[in-house]
Amino acid sequence: MMKTPRSLLLVLPVAVWLTGCAVTQVSSPAPVVAPAAFKESGPWESGRWQRSASQNPSARPEAWWTVFHDPVLDDLVSRLAVGNENLRGLAAQVNSAKATVDASRSALWPSLSVGPSLTRSRSATSANGNVVGTSAVNNSVALSANASWEIDLWGRLSQASAQAKASYQASEDDLAAARLSAQSTLVQTYLSMRTAEAQAALLTRSLQAYDKSLSLTQARYDGGLAARSDVLQAQTQLKSVQAQLAESRAQRSQLEHALAVLVGVAPSSLSLASGQGVLPAMPAIPRILPSQLLQRRPDVTAARHRVEAAYAQIGVADAAYFPSLNLSASAGYRHDSLAGLLSAPNLFWSVGPSLTEVIFNGGQRELASAQARSGADQATATYRQTCLTALQEVEDNLVLADQLDQEAQFLTEALDDARRNLDIVMAQYQGGTVSYLNVVAAQTSALSSESSLLQVRNRQLAAASLLLKNVAGAWSMEEASGDAPAASAATKP
Image (cartoon, rainbow, N blue to C red; front, side, top):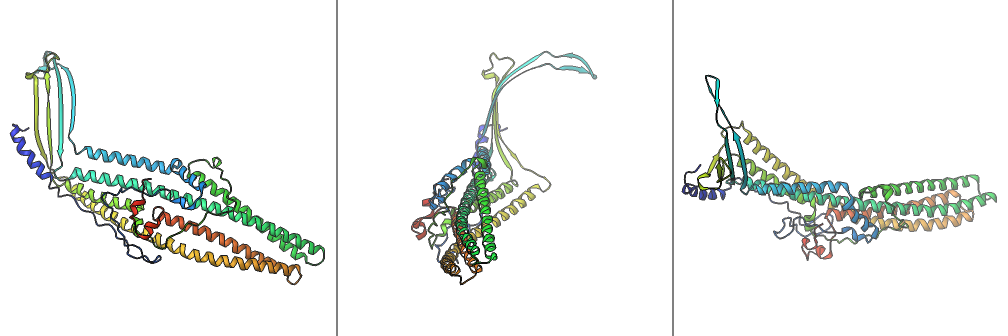
């Protein structure tokens, strides 16, 4: 306990000066820089991965799925955030991380406690190990207040607060990443369901054509113009398409069930009207995308925040090498009765600093410091790998979008040729110049071409939705031309 307030005034400036000498802070490595040009999409704007101080780090673009212009899809995605149980669990983790941040900040401030106490006691007196009497009953009434404050000399508390804040931001980004992933899964599932409907519609049309072919073949067989094998081939082809139609309808139902689970309802509670075999329109994809779009990816920002948290933990571990300084004070009144308690003779107080240094702890500080540095190295490697994966995913879907567009053009031309060939072969068969095997081959080729075209269109839509996910949201033409910063279109989810 300090004897005079003057001594305390001498200690406080030194403590404040030492607080400014927080030598335990370790700077994290610089963010990864995106390439100036991407392999699969021509020139990209040079990447700027660092955020400005005014930019909201958790900002995310909204409603990227609306580029498909499908009101049913829009409604499903709006229900996703409310009903998905996985997202609810992550939201609870975010709230827990926020509470940790508040707790770490409160440690920077003094603590104050007050409380009254009332005791009644009597003690025994002894001689030669024998009780010889008892003292009178004593009463003690006290009203006291205690204050303590750990001076953050070496930045341990501030580094712990910085670590908690970075971890909280990472948990927010994890939630945003999970939400984005769930949205992408829902969009792809929905597009696959619509593709299954389109496939079923194609098979239904084919069944009608095959049924007419069977009727024609049966009439020719009855008239002696066709062999029994022609009828059997027509029946076989018809039954095969009927089996494919049943499979498509089952697939459509399963995909609808998956959508129900994604939005958090039982499969029996969700029933979506048929899309009549029409797929959503393919959104336009700019040929040039600015690399700032990758700043939006929440998995990238989450990994970056974990690097910051890991380096803050190094500061916390290193601060354990230095002594801790605590200022404490207490004051109150104590008397043998409540009457007259609050009077000057009953006042007591104490104030003073205490300095504590660990002399020996079996190497725990060294181990904690080494562990913190290993964790920082691991977080840095994970962050860099996340950035590389982000770049790869964008490259993959850019090349897919381009190559699938060419593939769709080729399949469209092939389908036109297959349909013309089918018309010619059917006319030849009716004229008796070719066998029914030629008809079967022509019908199979036409059905296969149209089915392949449907699958490619589904893959195109899936590639577009994945590209939207990979750049964490919808792009705009201003962003594509580099005229506006990526953050201008970002809003909090």
